[in-house]
Amino acid sequence: MHRVVVLALHGVIPFHLAIPFQVFCNARGADGQPLYDVVVAGRRRGELATSGGFSIVVPHGLARLEQADTIVVVGSEPPGAGVDDRVHRALRGAARRRVRMLSICTGAFVLAECGLLDGRRATTHWRYCELLSERYRRVAVDPAVLFVDDDELLTSAGAACGIDLCLYVVSLDHGAQIANRAARTTVSTPHRSGGQAQFIERPLVSVEPHSLEATRQWALQHLGEPLSLDDLARQAAVSRRTLVRRFAAEMGTTPLQWLNEQRMWVARQLLEQTDLPIDHVAQHSGFGSTPTLRFHFRRTLGTSPKAYRDSFRGESHGESTLLA
DNA sequence: AGACCAGACCGCCAAA
DNA sequence: ACTTTGGCGGTCTGGT
Image (cartoon, rainbow, N blue to C red; front, top):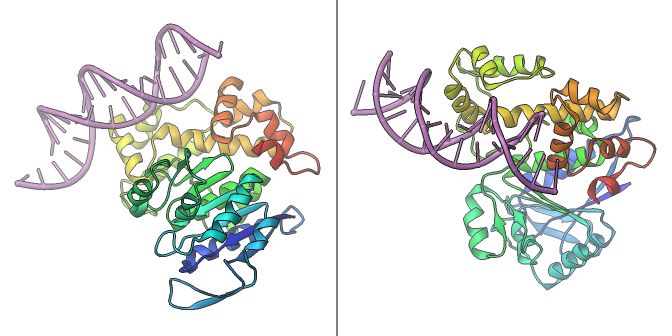
């Protein structure tokens, strides 16, 4: 089983600590078996102060990181608290073994402090982006996204984005369907991808009369057909310009980005669950052609549709293929 | 793999 | 006076 070790340091934020457990423990195979073994480790075993003014008892020390397939560094207050030489060595050792590492919120400061983000793209909570980039000049901080996937180093913004990132990782390992199911169990949305803006000006669940919800539903039902801005604008009974603006305000994306994201979900599920030829998948998902489908797979998942399908066939659930 | 071109995106301004 | 919308056009993107 894939071993996830959650690293909690002094001042750990309890909410963030719960996230990887909630998501990875709810990721179950078709037979209901857990797919991840999740444990928490600290700088040493025993009592650990949280940012909430109470302490927890951590069952493992840093040695546990040596057995990890994935390490999740959760946020602490203040950012980067609790990093010392031992943490440094443990994380750098894991990095040398190319262990996959995730950070949630200010967890990015821990990775940066260990030099693991040098020359890489990364993100953190919007409030701390400036500080992260000032303190670690060699890190390319992107303040505008929910999470960043830079090979085996994945960093996420505020807490909710940590959920998105963990779900994304589940989808890399085990496909869209299992990630969707885990999302449903945790009662969160599986449809937020990394590229979205951290700021969404309107509330996430909008009940305002000029919400585009109906238009999005309509688009989802016609996803297999070519959909232009004009089509969507007509459906929403507004101009193209207004449609684009509303999309930005409500969703933090543009119409085309959103469409492509939805199409990716359809395509992934079709590849996972059916034997439809690739060009049929391209048609059904609305990408229209195989080259376009391939282009989007390459860009968002770094794989090809065929490799993606292959990695979900047979016994070996293929991180190897996906993350190579 | 690269170039080309339609269409998407977005800043700006005027109108409602 | 202030907010929201739509149109124009320059630039960028992504599909072929």
